[in-house]
Length: 229
Image 1 (cartoon, rainbow, N blue to C red):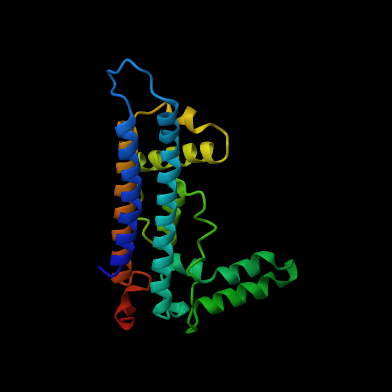
Image 2 (cartoon, helix red, strand yellow; image 1 turned 135 degrees about the horizontal axis):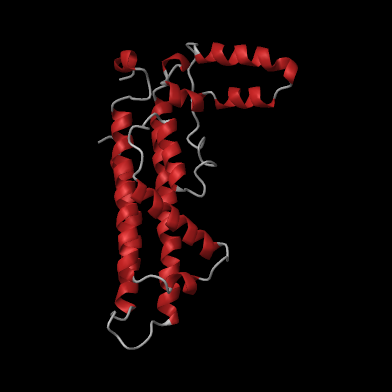
């Protein structure tokens, strides 16, 4: 493993979320209890979604930033990138083409493809995907995999629906669309633990996937991977 610190940071974030959920669970009355669930427990269960989402979004950004730092440290030439990641390496040129006047489209297109096939070294900023990774839905994670060329391992339907639920509930609480108590009264801690397990297992798997991706130098074409030791 080349990213042990990344794995440790992910584990630490989610341990905090798990500890918080355990605390809420200790306050929650049993299903057979006669007394109603207190407003405090309902609020805490609603806030759990905010906590879980924050750990997830930070982990996704951490994976992206760590991987891009590793890639940029290898000083990859444009011509050597695999096609998916080349789109990210060329984002400045693509932006220039998109914003140019009609009379300059042809020249900008020539420039774009000339650079794509050049021996020039490309340094990709580790924050290149920061904006795209805000409000991280299931589709966002699949897009992250696609831009790195790991689209053969998309997230499952269950994972995607769970991620989307977490984002929706977090947004409802954080943006005031729904109260934390209203969100929290719909779920018991056992339900929240299942959401936690799905999200954490996915984040841990993504860390391993990107670790393997970078370790195998899958960001450059197969025939020249040994060049970038």
